[in-house]
Length: 456
Image 1: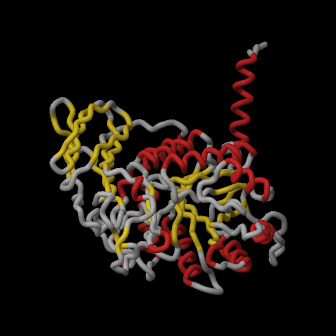
Image 2: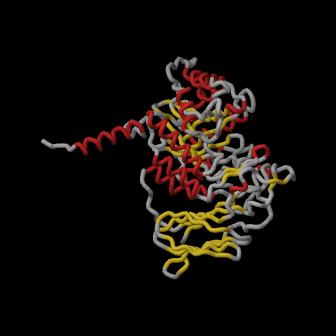
Image 3: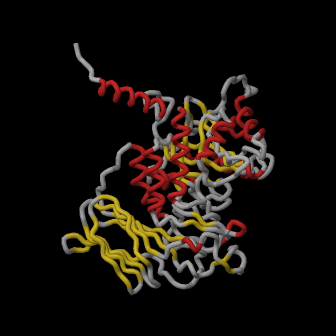
């Protein structure tokens, strides 16, 4: 008869507890860890006339990096701005035609006056669609805000979609995972008291999403850890954010330092360590707040939507760098590095330079948070073996001896070209000059450029 030690029994109980609070892998209706990207339905990459083929192209780009689906931000629906419903319908059709299992869920954006009846139609319209993301066999609904000044609206939103639908379906209609601000002390970076307030005010929530975008990496990671411990630790869902960069315009003219890829890495590692149920990249295509990671052409391309947001810079380097962390999150362990890659990020002007407060105006200024920025060039190395990296920034340079694996490096930047040379055994295995130079011209308005290079 076999015997069991107390240690074996303890480890077994821990494994069972982790499964029950985490991904419930034995339940086919509860999918394993998923990575989504927050998709602004109002501003698709191809413009207002985007077609099914255009949306399919975006989905292919996302899936190529390991992203499982989009969370569709809808600030309108059928009563006002009906283009939201029309475009959402095209997005679902695109996912279906793509035939790769790309999943979608809706995020009802209550900051714009969306009604409960419109929310109901969102659910009814797509709950049986083959590409609707489900948990426990039910469609998942998220939001951006919706709690209301007195928290009453938030409770109404929780209750409304779970009432009986006209077709006879009763009981709980959706799995509801919103982003609610803490009230009355609204903050974008919640501390423990804010986490507790939302959790205790809305016991009917199935889970919580943290729209963590406006903040630096350590701040976002710390808040995400608190939220994960609360929600996952209570047996509920937690969808963690990952945001590589943020810079707003107009009354939202502010910028947050992410130290290249370092802040993004902290956010990913927090989601992994604290067992986030899902991750949502914030965002895929919010051009106005510059949190986008969506590729939109050659890295030197800077025009979108007829220049509505001014000159834009490629953030594809962030998306490519995320592939490593997405793989780590999906599998639970860091993936092996099988080829040499560099991802580089830098602002195109020093932080002392002024930019345009609004793209369509000539008024100049510096965004909030500009003083905290770092005038450096940042590199994330993915190396299959030790190598030597030299960063040439203008007329300066610095050489780093880098071990195999993944590492984050930085050096102060200088005006001029930015070049990255990777050597191993006395031979260059990669030599890449950044697509944009750094100048004292503020045309890029405090945005950051992120690119990549792969050896061989």
